[in-house]
Image (cartoon, rainbow over all chains, first blue to last red; front, top):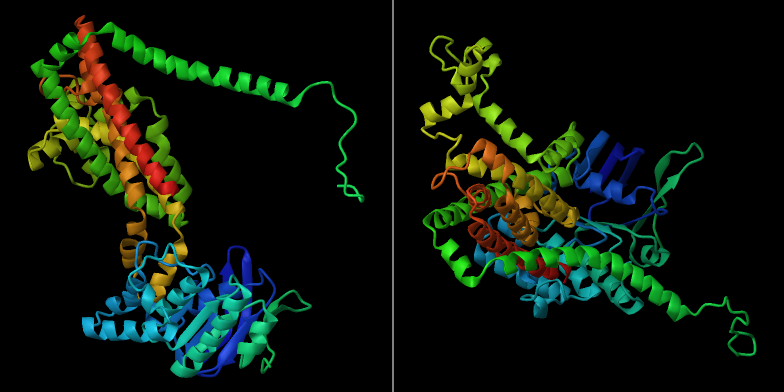
Length: 221
Length: 311
């Protein structure tokens, strides 16, 4: 479960204040809101890349507000994917496990699992520069999932894909959520994404007083 | 396109033809540009016509010029390595973080680029020979025993801790008017260029990849070493090459801080000066041409790196 309690976070001059919401463990939550309202800032605060000025971030009931990003067991997939240009697909999938000093056999088994799940087995020895949008997206997803995170943060993961690839990507994301039990917080502008994927829909909206609040819109469908 | 599908052309001409106007534009553009290109070509041609292959070879066989060539290669390489070693973390720091005083640091780093070369040499000389008055108050120097240094003795200034004396007595490394002074004078300027290059390099690398690495368990240091640094290898090579080339052309600070002693602190740039001062024009031109060849080689290497970066 993820819970934000009265979290305030700043991005330059922009201040998000008093953000509070809860998502149950294993749920697929969709976070919507207009461009520039602070969705990415909120994701960065949750995964520890942005300092929380006030309030608490709880993961599985544990207050992780002051923890470093690597200790939170969160998989983060930014909008531009931010793949590592000097590494192969296999090295992406091994990256987190190398940091955890996993043995070669454990690492190989996990890479095999992810390659099968994401259908990227044929890409393992390739660099990431020539990958298509859909392939790159699956590699970024595999990298985020490699260390078996408890929470997966996806920042507009399928917005840049064509309609056909987008449809298969949606199926893959939903399957991942069901098979691995990972809690997902997925930022999107697309109402269709919210309806087809979300168990819960959250909205960042500006209230009449000018403050931005998270509104839990309940079940997305 | 009109509603009937026929193309409508303007019926009134302004009296001048397009191609003619373009020709005038290109004529002005080419004329102005060729002035500078021509100047450089004429400079090189003048150097080449001044000497002959025989005189060139004879000058390069002189033992003092060969010694200067060896010292140039050594000091330029050391200055370039030191520059990259310092510029890589400093460029990363300036590119990625805003901290109190970061703008001031940014300006300070650029000072050696705009400082007159002789002033830089003089500043180095003063830094190494000026007694530090604060050290007396801090008890770091024994006022009775501490040397007053060359500058202090001449001016009768109070004793204090002197960098040159300390390096010579404690570490056994005399600097001023020795070859380490050549490296330091070259490093002071070339490092500034390396920092600029490394900063631009890191500006062009997506910082979000390092953020993702941190969510996967990297510390900031690991994210730098494992994600940012491997992407910066062309920038590092470019910074090293620019530093090397800049060190090759350094003259003013070397003359003031290291002197121009044959077989001791003479590098190619000071060779040109020394040969000129004794009326050996052939040798001066030969050394100049050698430096031109080295500079062209560096430029070609940089172009190759630049082409790789753009692809």
